[in-house]
Amino acid sequence: MQVTGLDHVQVAIPEGGVAAARRFYGGLLGLVEVPKPAALVDRGGCWFVGAGVTLHLGVERPFAPAGKAHLAFAVHDLDAVRAELAAAGVPITEDTLDVGFRRFYAQDPFGNRLELVSRDEPARVQGLLGERGDFQVSTDPARLDRAWLAAALSERAYWALGRSPEVIERSIQGSICYGIYRGRRQVGVARVITDQATFGWLCDVFIDEAYRGQGLGAWLIETIVADPRLAAVRRFVLATRDAGELYERHGGFGPLPNPERWMARIRT
Ligand SMILES: CC(C)(COP(=O)(O)OP(=O)(O)OC[C@H]1O[C@@H](n2cnc3c(N)ncnc32)[C@H](O)[C@@H]1OP(=O)(O)O)[C@@H](O)C(=O)NCCC(=O)NCCS
Image 1 (tube, rainbow, N blue to C red):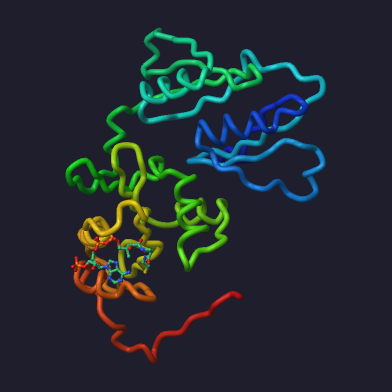
Image 2 (cartoon, rainbow, N blue to C red; image 1 turned 180 degrees about the vertical axis):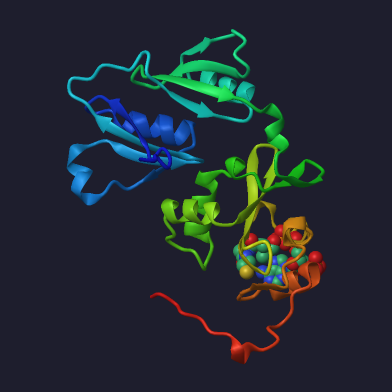
């Protein structure tokens, strides 16, 4: 037997707790709610995904909060997370014992114990590809703001309208995902689907509306084509409706050399 990974964790919530769970796990912790399979909807509860997290909240009758068993969420900036939770009225318990990483405990709205862990403060800069003023380009998948991505791609990007959080998560896992950040706030994204050897497909290029027209899109493309992981890639392609000049000027892209040789199989 070989266990290949942790599929999900189930946490119990009380009857009528779904709204508070959504506010806490979705609104505050930034996990993205995904629909439950139709066959399970009647049981109540709700499901969330996040970076490396699949969380099922299920209704338990009678309910007793988990005081010892707990979820431990990894975060980058432990102090900022603590401040945000405290400001939202979440009970915080410190643990200063030296265990090789920093952590504290918190409670969800139902009294379930949570641990917040930061093993790698320097990991904030893991995947950092470029800095300009207070903007950064990073390929650290853990830094991607799943809620921003879902809203940007599935609601505002003409080619990805309706894309579900699960598909977005799978797409992140299967590509190099470039985020632009101002501090902790995500302001842009692009992905390259690539074997990092022979082929690359640039897609999902999106700059937040509030940050357009100040050179971020150009800088993102320039940073991507300079990524050493893509240096050996001979065929680097993309499709665009109206932003061709951006890719031409800032990424060196041009028309397909032999468009008649290309084929596509589109699932409708
Ligand atoms: C296209 C987009 C990524 C550009 O980002 P941005 O940060 O606003 O762009 P910049 O300020 O860096 O401008 C870069 C250059 O691209 C040009 N440009 C910007 N948007 C463009 C567009 N829609 N079409 C053509 N050129 C565009 C600018 O004129 C500028 O030219 P220059 O620097 O060579 O003079 C952004 O407008 C966006 O997210 N749009 C919605 C999503 C989208 O269409 N993505 C592209 C899908 S292929």
